[in-house]
Structures are given as C-alpha cells and as structure tokens.
Length: 468
Image (cartoon, rainbow, N blue to C red; front, side, top):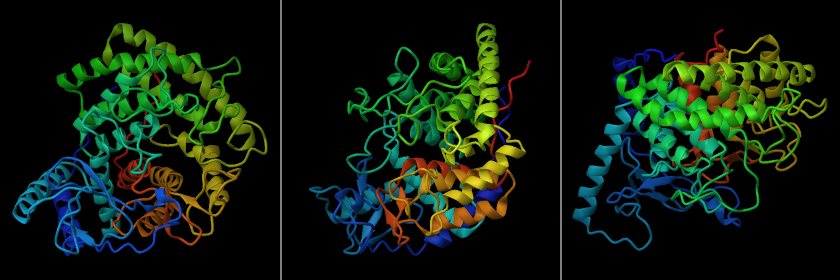
C-alpha cells in the first residue's frame, strides 16, 4: 500500500546545507596527476562537470586543474575559465553569466531534496553523488552508467537503482522520468535487454543476452517512487500510467520461475550466464512483492493479479530459503559456489532478513574483503582478485545500515568517501594500491551509496510481505 511520505526534516536539511557549504566553500582541488592505468584510455575519466551554458555533461580528463563552484557541478579551471567540451569558445562575461545561472540551478535542485549523511565526509560524498546523478539522467530519462565509451549506455539495473535513490532524496520528478524511459524500451514480453542506447533507439547489439533481474529491479523502483511521492491523486494517475510496465514485468518474473521454484538461468549483475544465481533470484523476489503491493492501489483487477504474484513470490521465497539457504546463501544453490554480494539483496530495502540471512551476509562480507579494504563481487570472482568494486562495497554498507549495524556501515561508508577521485566522484573500482580506477562516477555506486546514507539515518522503506 502507498504510505504517507516521511517528513524530509527541513530544519535538519538547512543544517546539512550549512555544513556542506563549509566543506566546499573554498572549492575542491582537482589536481589529477594519476588515476589508474593511463595505458587504458577508459581509465582517464575521473569525474564530470556541468557545461556552464548548455545542460550537458563534460567528462573530466585526468590532468585538469581547478575547483567546483560551491554545491555545483560547474568547474572553474586553474586558468580562470570553465570546463567546457572541446571546441567550445566563450567570452569571459558570457561564461560568468552562464556559470552563475548553472550554479543557481544546481543549488536549487540540491536544496529542494534531502542531503543524507551524519558526518561532513558523508554529506560531501552525498552532494557530489547527487550532482553526478543529476548530470547522468538525460532529458529523455536515460541514465548514463559511466562517462566512457563502454559505459555510455543505460542499463535497466543501474537505472532502477538511480530512480530509487533520486525518489528517496526527494527528486521524484526526475525519478519518474527514468521510469518512463524504462517503460518506453521494455519489450512486449515484459523483459529488458542488458543495456540500451541513450537516445532510446534500441538495445545495444553486442551479443550478450537479456538480463532477467531487470524484471525485479524495475517494479521495486516504481514501488519506491510511489512510496516517496505519497498517496496523492496525481501520484495515482502517474502510477496508472506506469502500471502496464509493472504488470508486464511481474508477469515475466512469474513466468521465469521453473518447476523447482527458482528462476531459469540468466545473466545477473556479474554479466555471467550460469545456472540460476542469487543475483537473479533475490531481485525477482523483490519485484514480485513490490508489484503485489502496488496492485492494491491500482484497482480491483490489478489486485487479482497481485494475489497471483504474491503466490509466485511465496513459491520463490521458499525455494530461495530451501535451496540457497542450505549452502549458506552462496552465489548458486550448489555447494562450493562461494559467497556473493547478492546476499545483501535479501535484506532491506527488499525484505527483512532472518538470522540465517544476516549471518550469511556477515560471512560473505568477511570472505569478499580485499587487502585495500573494499569488497569484490564474489569469492569465485576470477578477474582482478585484489581490486575492490565500489557498488558491491556499497550494497554491504546498505545492508549493514538498514539492519542496525551502524558501526560496520559507517566503516564501509568512510572507506568509500576516502577512495573517491580527486574531484570527489565515486569510481567503479579501487585498485590494489588503493587508487580509484576504471570509470568515475559510476551511477550505480552513487545510487547505492545514497541509499546507504538514508538507511543509516533510519529513513529507508522496505517492501512489505504480501497480505493474505
């Protein structure tokens, strides 16, 4: 059911704004001498700035020097000019006028929502993550996964998480734009391909199969958006527009469940086509429960479908407990498949974990720790064994924060804050030497980190179990 929106703690937000302004007031030094391995060109992106005169992003190269304007994505370079795309020419007066307008727009947007975090470093990380996500969302609702050629696409998984993070920080309109993009590119059978062109022209045809977990992530994102927006007549009308997408996804979700109660094999967030994994099963469970709960707000006919999805969710939940639980919630239901960060998908905001899931998540976090302090995706992760992946580190921070393990969550969030690039963006990876690597910012990491900070403050909403 739609719940009344939680108070946004306006007075606390004003205090946060004051602290963030103090942190960024002198500007952020962005001297970037080395980030990762420069022999691989895609490692050279260390952040993104706002073109001061045109609403577009400017990926920042590794050697730019300058500082961001306060609570803004406008970057003033060491020479006194602004970061603009190659070939752009601005006279000084026009540049200053544009920058002032862009600064004001960023601050208005930022202050209109929630800036989560209980420490200065957390709040500073939240500000940059929010502003980076603002730039990542394109006018048509496509979400740029990362600012490099192999990442400049919209993954439904990443997009769903970004929609939730934006909705839960008060930017429900921008979140809805993302959901509308996902609705436009959804296949008639309710599924999504692994990634899409940013212009919405179609999926990326690179040979990889569809990733089934999207049919779980997207209904959860719609549920989260509806919860954040609140039960108004406008929200109900907007939900009615999105409902066909949710229903198609939930039907595809239900149809994917095999006779043994688990989903058919599919690529998950590892982008590895193996037997049914927890990284697919857990999101599908969340999607069925989210769709079933939303159905009660849509109407009598939807409620009938909701009962069917709730029954499918019960079947899947039983299979997850029986099959995955028997081996400690490893990557697959086979013993020896190893710990997987996806165990966190059985906790908030998707479900309230029982003692066995909590114990499995604690054990997985210990098993997946790498020497630099972050975590890798799974025990069986063969490539880059000493490299930490920030999204996977952040999902454990989310699990810990939402289950009352504040000390552990704070430790992981502090690690994330300390391993941002020199412009303050969260990278995809942190290498064995503790340096940010791969692309930055990574939208999925930004989203999970923001939800972790919200959870630490006790404002995260969890999908309820189906009733009846």
